[in-house]
Length: 156
Ligand code: FES
Ligand code: FES
Image (tube, rainbow, N blue to C red):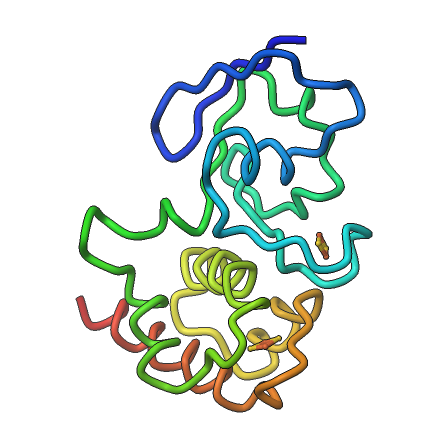
């Protein structure tokens, strides 16, 4: 089937999509956006998180056909050209990235949280990121990064 959708504000048309293909596969293998990671392919780890019509979803669980006519925003689309989003800057500055496999999903989820709750409490950060697993950092630096990003966005 043919899939037509918008990815990071660009119109994309992908041909010969198999009905069983996931949105994650299409993004990584057909659209050339490998930022979203495939770690579990079962909706357990959150590393494939993207926005679908403005809401974070696990793209490994979304059939590509469900994205027809819809808007997808990936971790690559968080930056404004060469200018990183504050949440991306904060993750780098706080040492919240080690192997980086979890990072794209955490960035999208944290970006969404700060948009909805400009100054989130620690409990709200933990709840928002509860579906995103990280095997490397112990989470403290991730919390630091979200706090820093929220403070910087609030000060803008
Ligand atoms: S790869 Fe999608 S939730 Fe783990
Ligand atoms: S930095 Fe390695 S899984 Fe999170």
